[in-house]
Image 1 (cartoon, chains in turn yellow, brown):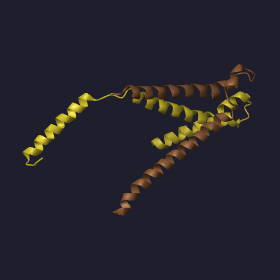
Image 2 (image 1 turned 45 degrees about the vertical axis):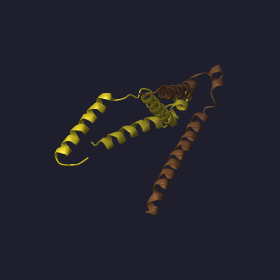
Image 3 (image 1 turned 135 degrees about the vertical axis):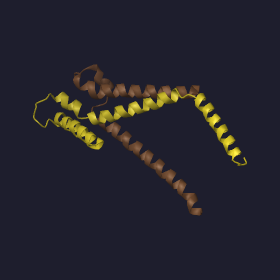
Image 4 (image 1 turned 90 degrees about the vertical axis):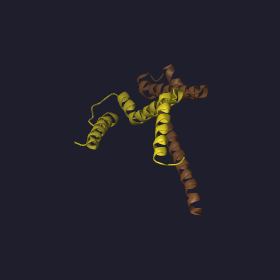
Length: 92
Length: 83
């Protein structure tokens, strides 16, 4: 089973359960409140995802840091590369 | 390093998203279980707006993204024509 099929199966199962509750397809005589809550659940999930993304972006902006070790490593590598190129006769 | 302004902006983004999430959760999930005459209902718009407002926001967002993309593409195409 490919990943795509797995995802499609999961999504369609969830969608079926959602439709069952939201539109009361099996005439389960669920309380009205359940249907009222279930109906906007997809939108609610979307809004939650948006909030999570916004919070992640905000958190990463607030805790953005310098990578001193990576910078020094990169400088080291640049120096090595220049040395190597100079040995091979490249003028810089 | 993140400057003071960065931290302020980032934390306010986090705070805003948390507030939005809490408010929307109460509005959509909790409110149907609360009695219709309860005081809590006074602080929320009618239920249909919990779908309409995000819909409008989504349409506006998509419009903005579309306009932005169009402007960028249009600006990038201009110099190529003069070549």
